[in-house]
Amino acid sequence: MVRLLDGEVSAWDQFVETYSGAIFGAVANTLRKSGRNMDDSTDIAQDVYVRLCKNDFRLLKQYDSERAGLKTWLGVISSSATIDHLRKLKGSNVPLDDLPEEVGSVEPETHDPIRIPDGLLSARQALVLQLLYDKDMDAGEVAAMLGIDSQTVRSTHHKALVKLRKYFALED
Image 1 (cartoon, rainbow, N blue to C red):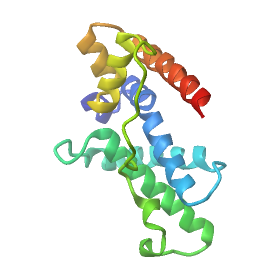
Image 2: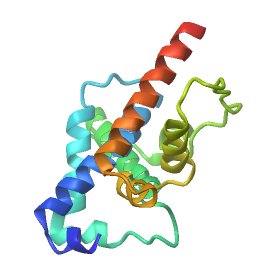
Image 3: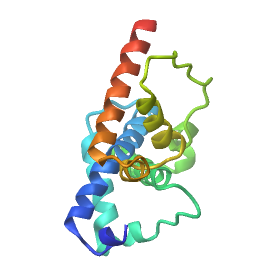
Image 4: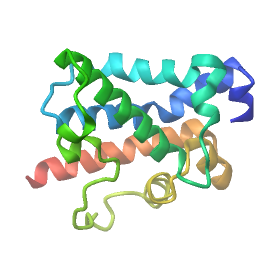
């Protein structure tokens, strides 16, 4: 984060690569909850990046790890940007109180725990998912912990998600 705030380009590239899924996911989730299609999601996600960079990373410097995980904080910023976008589309400033409550929610909806069948994921895939989602670690942190390359973490993550999507699509 220090390198990023110092304006190091490679640190920004790594930040975008690591957190683009969280940002885009929060934007998409807020759009979905508002009943909108995904047409503007890329523009809104881009607006989030602009907000984070504006005024020498002023917003990003406000992040406090004692109050929330970075992905959660980015989710709040992304949801806020999406709500602002929705207000502009309506042509007026709609009070936040007039939007459905679930539009502004950041916390995931509560569901029964997902049961992943034994043997569906490799031990490494299961561990990577646990560290990324349960422990809210980023790919670099997981890579350092496991002593592997961060690209291997991202690849393992992707392969695990493909397996899970395939399995749960067949289950419906």
